[in-house]
Length: 61
View (cartoon, rainbow, N blue to C red):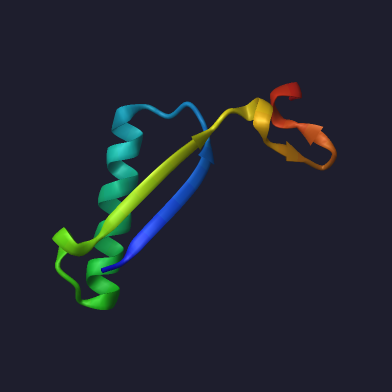
């Protein structure tokens, strides 16, 4: 049973989340030959104020 966790800055729309889940599931079904019902995708949205890159918070631009 594949379990995939995706962490990303948010917020994302429900339609974007649906597209991500469908795409990841489809890829794993094709690559691993598993039944789609066995694929679990966990989406974690992180506030931009809780992510730093290059010494700066993403919220700071």
